[in-house]
Amino acid sequence: MRKLHIPSAVIAAALASPLSASAGEITGRIIDAETDRWLPGAAVVITPGNKRYLADSSGRYEIRNLPAGEYQVQVSSTGYEPTTVTIDVPSDVAVTRDVFVA
Image (tube, rainbow, N blue to C red; front, side):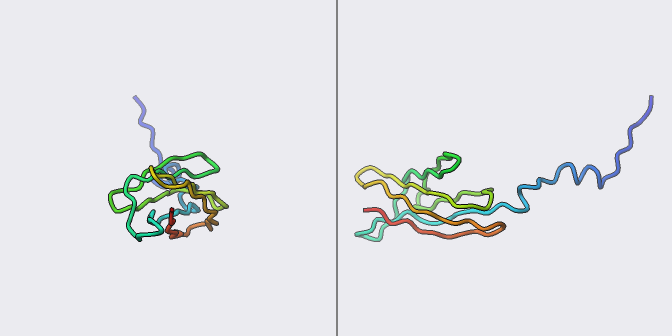
């Protein structure tokens, strides 16, 4: 029986994701515009891609592994008007953007 020997550099190169090196992200909080309180559980939809997220118990949202580009982030929560903001995401950068809803 023959053993196949693959150099570790080849394995490492195969496992490395080319997207992860250039991926950006958007983070922030969803905030009530009148009371400045965080909105846990607010729905966050990002396009292009139509990816959906929920804000955590502190109103925080985090969208990772985004190719560089312009995104529309729509936020909705019961009792509030849907709010859409446009965010430009550079390569390899975490953009912080709080979204205020009324």
